[in-house]
Amino acid sequence: MLKIESIVIDGIEVKFKLYPALVLENNIRWKEGIIEFHPTKKSIEDNSWQEELKTYFRKNKDFCLNYSGEAIDIKNKHFYLFGEKINFEIIEKINEFIFNCEKIDVLEKSFNSLKLLERFIKNFCEQRLFRYLIYRTTELENLLKVEKRNKIILKKFNSYWGRNSFTQNTIEYASRLFPFSQEIIDSIIYHELVHCFFPHHKKDFWNKLYNYVSKEKYELYSNKLYFGVFN
Ligand SMILES: [Zn+2]
Image 1: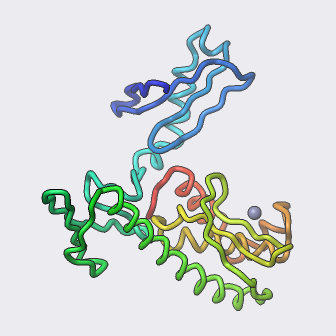
Image 2: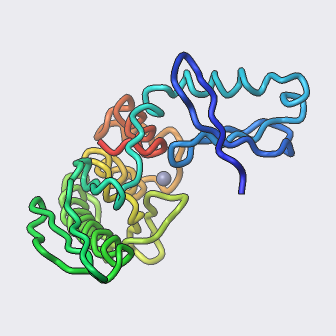
């Protein structure tokens, strides 16, 4: 496990992990509030990696600073659903945790462990997401006048947000979409449905997509998805 380090950039403490220099080109990515930096050998030798890290942070500062954190945060007693932060209460008793969340109409529900409580919230959120995806996909299929997909599936995708599978006539969505606002989720649904016209990501595809979500908004939402800004 790599140590999480921090550096002060323009007065802001920024967390990062410095990976061993192995690659030809440096590679910076943002993951769960931490900048993961794979430097080049050269940038370690001439010590320019710090400047590269700073440049990346400054370029993406707004998104980095608005990072929403864990979608389900048991320690701080909140979770996100459709871009909304929902607070809850846990009363700890002997071998028991009592969960109260007025917002979702769950009162005095007992769990044997926090792990089970977390699973309950996750299932709840994923069910809500699934319901929304079914309803909204149908609505947008009508709007775009595309043939109705046979099936909508929630999947544990780590590298995709959605996938339109033509051979099976299904659309798969990532279950980790639940904390994001409905506008952000809609941008994914539009993206997948526009694939019914164009199976690629060439110019025609984007032109069509930007009829429904402006380029500016689409790029903003893509960044929010990437940086974990839920609303
Ligand atoms: Zn695509």
